[in-house]
Image (tube, rainbow, N blue to C red; front, side, top):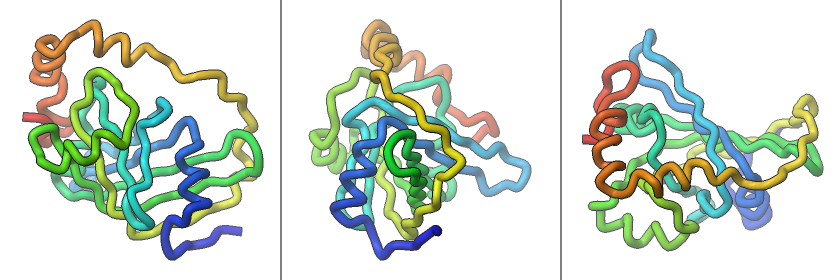
Length: 181
């Protein structure tokens, strides 16, 4: 059934990047803090950098939980699920880092992704554990297309509107941890 892999080989990298959606899970250190799971999608927003490193484009949204949790403790898991083809679930456990636009590494990372308005960071994950499980109970679903609502919303806000939105909505997590400053 489930296997643990030494890293992300080319076959797995191809499978991961072909999935139209993945889930990100993080949590604060405090036991009573809120655990966060966040669905991610949009083609071209996830990249395998090498066999032990992945990254994804972080676009402005309603919360800042992932960023706040990573800044506090770095713990992260990404889960990919096959909704068509052979059933499969893959989890990438690791340590995440928030790379902001002012960071010199940002310029090297951003060309790996498709263009989207409202990019606030790139999340880079040093993957410590790669595992799969059966996915037998996951339903078959048909991918129709990416939604363009987030891109349209971010484009409509414009850079000044996004900066103001981030100040209001992305400065702290639900538990009060620092987010974007």
